[in-house]
Length: 101
Image (cartoon, rainbow, N blue to C red; front, side, top):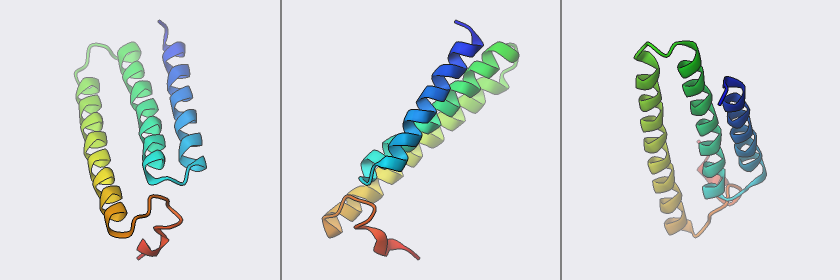
């Protein structure tokens, strides 16, 4: 595997996630698109770390921190989506527009 293949896979993940985030109105599908985009960024960062500076320990620590932040973000996002659904029986972004500041 080469760096170019990893970056191509990361760009593919990011593009699929961007399409999913922009084309879906369901809150869960929007969050899945955002998660795919973040996974693409993490894959690119891990590949760059592995091929450019494999001796350092900064790369793996950064990847673990980012993956942990992603897990927390998804847990909070799904909790908010579940709370909105339970309170108003809506699961689309247009129907939840009254949440604006």
